[in-house]
Structures are given as structure tokens and as C-alpha cells.
Length: 400
Image (cartoon, rainbow, N blue to C red; front, side):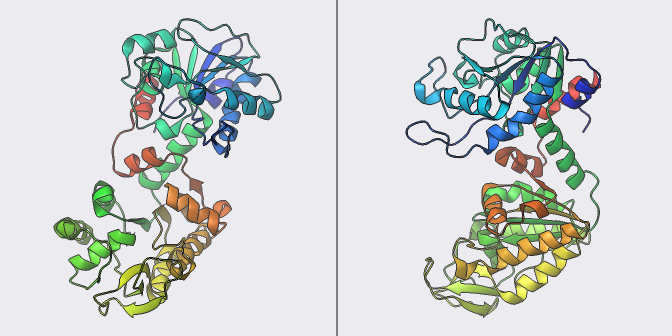
């Protein structure tokens, strides 16, 4: 994906004395008192800000936070706590500016934080009038918020159309490169793991990946529906019987290109959904009427681990079972270890989605995954094959 980058502009010395507008993703969790409880996104935004400051720019940063009502800024919607944290991380003052659309005063070497951009009327509807006003504030627009790249809003899309120069920040550029590497020109075999509670929420992903991968591994409730499609019993497990025809189409797509979808040969079941429920391993064709499938079995874990360890490229979205319960975590843990081992052996791995990131943290393999995506919805829409508006506009600008 060809886009102009902030890094390339800095190397050219093109930012000295320029006004730079950075759209970051600073939508962090807070407690009832407004204190930041997890600051990963703030810390991740700092490299782009430093890059622009070091290049001699006057820097403006903005982000959304929560779901404010357009036209009304409340204390709960304010970026004030984020300004404090940014100042700590940068080691310099970060002035918070409200009502900024009609003008901002900022000097080279200074950074200001512009209040919650979703308070501005027309932000979510990608208002051209608002976008033009914001574009007039800067000489260079930088999108460094991959998490919002699937939304066409004034600060993610509209401003990029009208700013004199529009580019990708280091976070967004890294996402574009990693996703392009995983699906654009992957090292084979390409293995994708898609898991979750429902086929319906990931059917588009399954259909898109079926046309590209060599092996498609499914887990969770999605795997249960595929087991039903294969005529296997699933007891009282979570599934969507009405989507059996769609599952069969996915399998047919894979078969036409010589790819496979390996179904579980054994599963781990319980009679109730609870952390202390006794776990039993059953053959996939011997699941009983009152069984709940909560994980793959040990034989399946070993088979899937072997497939993953032989992969050249791995895309991971979703745990194989209820890994939050230790009795039903083996499948996900073995998968995580296999991905780590394959990556260490030279495979390229990319992972995304909230549950996936939780599993990566639990099994401490973050340093053994090639790339961990920062954008949940944007990551999924990319896997669905949908264009991301915020990326597409940067590509258009780069193409002239």
C-alpha cells in the first residue's frame, strides 16, 4: 500500500516550521474519577509527536474519547487527563485547547492537545465544511490512528482530502505494512485462525480468507457450526444451525483451490459453563446430548500446532476455546506456543482482536508475534477485504 509517511517527510527536512496536525487514537479507559486506568494508546502515540517536534514542527494532536454528544463538551468527555499523561511522557508541557476548529495558536517546538474531536458538529458524518476548516489549521496532516481507519470521519478522512500534505504516522504505517505483508504477498503456507462465538459475525472474514489461505483453522462457536455442517454431534454447544449452508460454501471454496479446513478430531466438554466444571475429552463423533464443547481436545491441539509450526505466514483472530477457564485453555495455549515457535523459526505472524490480545498477554508471547494490530474493528474489516477509508484517502493523495 503506497502512502506518504511522516518518517519520510522528517528525513526530507520538510517539517521545519510547519504546522502539523496529528490524528491519534487516545481513547483510553478511565475510572469513575476520570483517572486513566490503562495508557497503552497514549504511550503508542508519543513516537509520532516526538518525530514531528524533533523535525521543528508546531504540533497539534487530537483524538476522540468515548461517545460525546456533538456540540457539548462535558468533563467526562475531556482529554484533560490525557494532556497530563502526554506531558509526563514527553517531558514538556502539553496545553489543552478547546473550541479549536476556527483557529489554533501553536509555535514550532510546541505541542498542543485539541479537545475531543467528536464534540465537533459534523465529525462523525465526515462534514466537508468541518474538514476544510480543520485542513486550514495545518500544513501537514498525519493519521496515526489505525483503530479508527475503518471510519470515514472528518478527522480521519475528510481532512486528509483537503490538507496541503497528508501522510501516515508510524503506527498507521506499521499497520499498513504488516497487513499488506500478511495478505498481499504472504510467505506460504498462509494459515489463518478465525475463532469466536458466532459464524454470523465473521462470515465475511471466513469467505474472504477462504479465497487466500492454504489452511483455515476455526475455533469456538464457529467451529461448532462447522462440526454440525460435517454431520457431527455438538450436544448443547453454542452454534448457528441456520448457517450450515454458508459453512459448507466456505469449505467448498477452500477445496476448489486445494486448501483445507481441519476440523477437531476430539474436543473438551463440560455439562455446564463454569470455571469449576469437570472437563472431559471426547472424540468429535462421540459428543453427548448434554455436553458443552468448551475447547478442542489434546489430539486436535497437537494437529493444529503442527499446521501452525509449518506455516510461512500466520493470521490469528480469536482463541480456540474458553481460555479464561484453565480447564478449557489447552487449545489456545498450545496454539499460542505454536505461533511463537513458528515466528521464532522465521514465519511472519500478525494477531488482532480483544480476546486474541488477552490470550497473547496471558501466555506472554507478545515479543514472539511479528505484529500485534492496534485496531479491533479496522483489523477485522481489513480481513473482510473491505477498503479502509482513512487508508484509501492517503493512497489517493500519494497517487496524486
